[in-house]
Image 1 (spheres, rainbow over the protein chains, first blue to last red):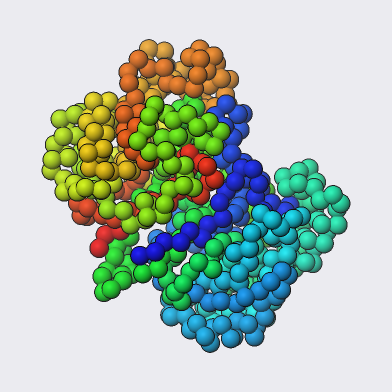
Image 2 (cartoon, each protein chain N blue to C red):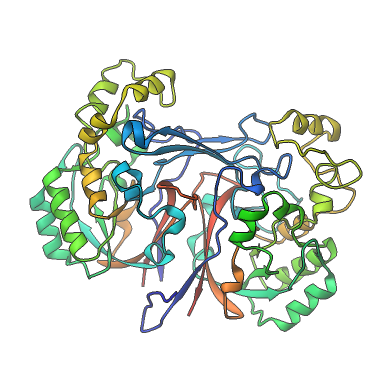
Length: 255
Length: 286
């Protein structure tokens, strides 16, 4: 049995995903610090997001209600869609990879683009997030429908984002030069003015995937080390009562 | 709950993880070793159409996984001198955490009971304890429902392990090459030791103060000269962690395990050079 850690390490010195105002800065405080302890956000590092993150689906399962079989030693089909900086995963890409990989009914689906195998520590200026490969809306819809029809309700991927929040979030936030830090006064003010309509435009792909009842895990690393086309995954999120998303540990198990 | 199996086996997966919620007793009971869970929503269903949360946790939140050098990455001093293991969270090979053979040491304990050396010895002798096993001390105390209902009393009234019993188990773990100690007790140290002159002892605080960084916790550091419990009695947890790769407490619902041995999946957060973390504990019965 071979175990592969697919988790982005949480470093108090620097995290590559603290770019957008929707992020929380990962913080580790020593024992004599006023803020002793650990601070994480809903999507710090490798993270699990449930459909209940979105208001439309808030009556669906929460983190502490998830049957453990959904996340632990779950049979998983591995699909490869190689992508480089800023490239979009198209519907044709998805059609081809599903034709090749043929996920078994009830499997989770792990899509590896290669993005999580790059040395993100060397990417400057938020490039890990801002240049991440992402789905087109047509690709996400097609993938989501195929997954729903095949009871594949867990999607894992090595990209930083699922879709590109390019209507408001990225152009508006990144037009501020220098870009303010996360959790800054500017970030709070930006979120104060951000609203449901803007979020729906920016997160159309995430909302579409959630509508189809699919849980997602993003920001996997080292997927290139997986050799088998069918594995088991262990997804271990923080067990937050009534939580909708959390940082998690993800391990691939190869027999 | 039946699970999936490989090779024709049917597996049963049992989640033994204490949930995390704001106000949880484990974050409120002690002055330093754990601090309050604070969950702050900063994106809202009604305003943004989605929920995002800033979570202030602690290395000992929920069911924690704590290595001997627990204060890392800022202070590499181990809790006890010359510990047998010295891995930080990110250095532990996955083989040491996943599907670990684990023996259950059954010691039924009423509330407030301190497990004695005789009870520990009997439990060890009765168990099917094999070389290389990890250890789960099951008292029956830890349940999700009880933790939700009792608040800080869950920890004030928890069974615990007397120092001499802990020392006996530590010696056995060393002999058997066991590396991970787990228990469903709320505290490993007796409350009279861990909560000395905080919620127990000659001069307990009433009402109970908030933990660090409260003024009372800071004053305690001034009084004791360090972040410690100040009890004259030795630390049971200290005896165990000297011989263990990790100490883990506050597991719940262990009575759902039907067999005397299980395989455990133990996954703390992957904190770079970290010393302690909330952890998921899943028992796998085949």
